[in-house]
Amino acid sequence: MAAIRTRPLENLLKFKPKNKEKRKYMYKKLITALVQYERIETTLNKCHDLSRVAERMIDLAKVGDEETINSWITKKNLIPKVFGHLLPRYENQVNGYTRVYKIPPRKRDMAKMGIVEFVGNDLPPLLPSEEELRKLQLQKLTELTPKGIPSEGTPV
Image (cartoon, rainbow, N blue to C red; front, side, top):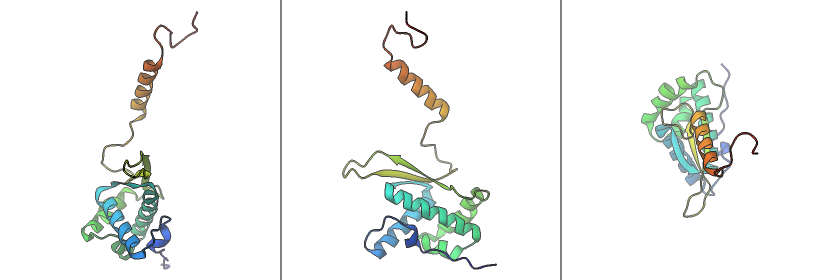
């Protein structure tokens, strides 16, 4: 089997705070929280970086690189969750293990915020289904149409 060269954690990141040790510690805590809760809320830049790191982590788990995953996750009791719960979920997928949602900015400093989650988790969905969305749109349209004017057909 050919040796696989893994990229260090820092090379996967685009948002890079200046202090290297703090940056590594911050992203290790974030990836640990994502594995533990399967959905977390943070700033949008960190969400995109965390999504990239999580995708790479699942790819490494597919190959069996437990050493790198062990260095990325701070809580060692979550490593069996990666191999026992997350890996079988994405066994037939090539990519697209995470999803990033944009949410309204934080009030105190107006930072752009986002939610990153693993696809196929057991948590309630963030977005309504298509049927619910259609009902909401119809309800909004009926509220906006003025009284006495039919919404269908040609007015005479």
